Length: 466
Image (cartoon, one colour):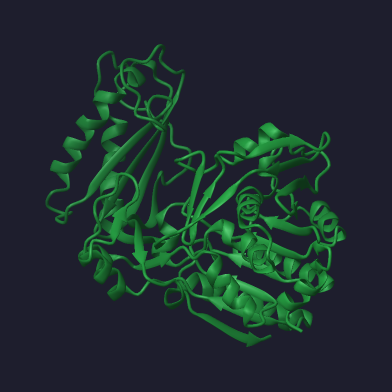
């Protein structure tokens, strides 16, 4: 009997569907899974385990480079813990956005770890892999047909953008996970996926109302982040007909109507509409009520099936090699003049390196304490006591980037400004060398929605016995 068939027999009774218990074990696998809450969650006998492993939040580098944001050791430990846990109670485990960004190299590295763990620990299961790399020819055809739209303030997608991206992925919905489970998978490791798909695919297959199931998935995917005080501990969602209950496995984290309702807005431009490949989750009529001081019950969300399937596509393109200069300053006169000093130093540096660094390069500087996080308009209400200066150079080669950063350091260190007393020593370097070669820089070049006729061809499923 397959995992999904076993679940159908467990929850389906002549009286109707029994409550479905879903354990969210990690909001981003690879950063550690607190033991006590995870063990407590297993003790509640969940019907399946789910985890997210990535997003675009860490930036374009991981999608562009094919590298994981998490360490191999931590990632392996988390995977081993969850695989052991799922197999110990004989329930499915679903993982979405493998390896941070969910492209082929991320998925392959994650699958290799899963196979190694299974061999080392004597685990046996049917493993499904779902790829999320988008066919570039299909994207180009969609561009020509006017079926690709930008998300936010990004230019319209061109065929050149498609060719230049190192990796392009699409976010799969519940359909791909359901195909993997129908094929008999016990463990599903997916490439780039909607966070909700990991947790809503099984409830939808079993016949639970899709609106509440999708709303529950939206809330529990980040584990106990929806509680107060928020955290990363495992979270149990219990789906019971048209409502569901949220229950943190850490007794100090409480799911309140306010904390859970606030998390429904997480990462959403529209507070009431969550767009998925297969439809839209509408939470306008959702109701949040306290079960007790620790748990919250939610009801009222509805599902609007799509009239046209859409897939969010993401891609990253190399822009050059990066070096950064890191320095602090506590000179009040230098701080007061910093907005004038940095452009003046840049002008000098560009003139000095023009013969040795012939390829174009970009310079960006941020002064933490003045405008490092946000480009504030208008004068400061008061000067900070000290600031941190970060100068970034992106150039054609690592050597060029380092050359520019090194020259910038020297001329920033000795630049003249009104009221200067010392000709040097106006900067403090946290370490030496203060110029750090930071590797290849990427930018998001594909962040669009593509209309598609069918989802299945875009997300192929493969099955193997492990």
